[in-house]
Image 1 (cartoon, rainbow, N blue to C red):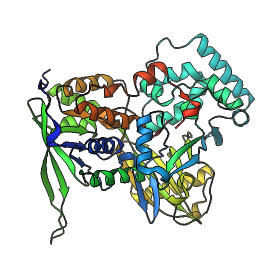
Image 2 (tube, rainbow, N blue to C red; image 1 turned 180 degrees about the horizontal axis):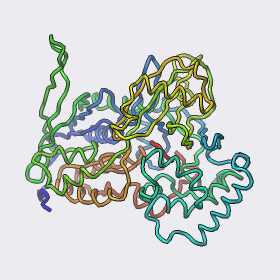
Image 3 (tube, helix red, strand yellow; image 1 turned 30 degrees about the vertical axis):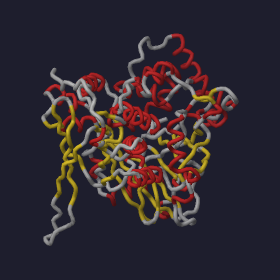
Image 4 (cartoon, one colour; image 1 turned 45 degrees about the vertical axis):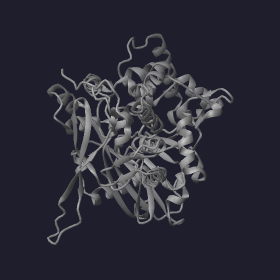
Length: 506
């Protein structure tokens, strides 16, 4: 396979840098470049910054695209957040539950609540299943099913992991790679869960990251962070261009030379809005767009085998159905995981419990219902009215909201929300990585830029390291949240809890 040959000498960044994508990784890269006095142009195809961590609004109600907690063990990320928002952070208690078999389970698990809901017989079966997994574990941990079963037993895996995970990803757990579990359920096992359920986290010792009891949150939602980052860039010599979709990435001699963007024009007299194209040159490039799209937009085209690898990578999409409810309070949770196969909704966000300032009317509430799907499938193609009605029915079926209390709603569709860890992705990704390594002035970062289910703070760290690479240092951005998480199942010191876990599963 041929790859572009990198130049032996590094050019200075006097020609400026171009950042593709205005999510957490892209904006972190742009801010870091501005702080180093590098002229930077950031190109974001959406009308808002923040990517999947943006905050949308409807009729004055603000809402996340998913839920985003802010806590990190990465000092640079913590300082970045504090420098930009400072006092605009509020501390929120973490309250979440699992809806399974018609009952609500506290999460993290609490012993008496779990025992009462499961019943004595099932609880005994869970314990014996766990003991069996310790005596006769899966010898290899290649899949999500094997990884989780070895740590919790097959019985608890089927109760609390299988249904929800398959609802999220749309494929059997036996086809999801173990790397996903290692990144999202770090350090957690049945003994740890039971110990914490009975006695709480060990004070002064370690606590599993997913069991943290409180977190930081921007007062007006996570998008407030990225709106502030965009303002910083614009005020420090950079430029943030919204509704600027990158349609070509041109390269020559092992270097990216420029990108071509397409932006909408104002409607003409006949109502049409023809697109406007522009060329943006640069000395260095940081891309956060889905890595499969990056490959397909290269000009000249990548080799056939690289294009085939890009086309082989898959994604999971989701829909947020926002319901405005004519009730001042509904339930105490920030969010609820819905494991029941009887409804399609996967997770429910209660935005007023994230921050009261997300809801403009104190006599009302706003919910975000997350439906995981694949772009183009029947759920994705449902009309906005049909989706709002589906949400109304399902909230009533679960018993959280009376159907007649739902006053209004809106829908946001999020394509390519989560890179899929199926059985073929690793080989495809290795082919792409090998090819892109030949570009001396291009760094890919973030969740979609690396095709990795990173937390927000990990995505930000990849961007920080990428900027340092462009300025002459040597860091492996691909190893962030991989080697440490997967092989060591890293834990967080109890007195330094603070990282964001953005996304679907914990």
